[in-house]
Length: 181
Image 1 (cartoon, rainbow, N blue to C red):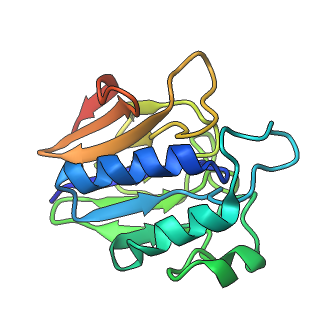
Image 2 (image 1 turned 90 degrees about the vertical axis):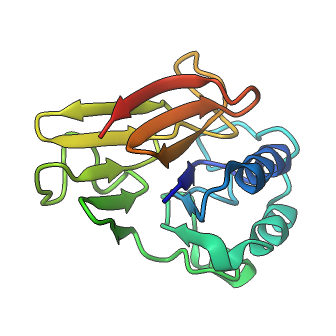
């Protein structure tokens, strides 16, 4: 099963279009959104082509293929615009051989993990910095930010396919970081 991950769109219509175009061509069955979808937040600059209402409309086209969690910039009013649930602060996806624990990254994060078993994958956003690595006996996976990347990284998204976690450049789909499961 192929899964695509995106985080921290922050209301950027251009980033949303790029993410959805990558999703349509990825062959992924599900798009997992890790929060901070519509609002830019008080600590962030306005992203390119800021248009939260239109971002919601574009995401809603894929509502039946989206699994999402709530970020620290998401609010109850955002849920009123979206046709898929975003109010859970975490969710779990069970695969044959492991569990993906999905969260935004402001309640649970790499230094404060939920209870996980060996081989599980902790999937989060929030930092806007890509990560794909095994730490002790769990994997840490962050697709970076599609709209407001930090740390000198390009805008990015994540993929899980063929036992490989990858963070890819949104513009060129070139790997930034990766880890084998």
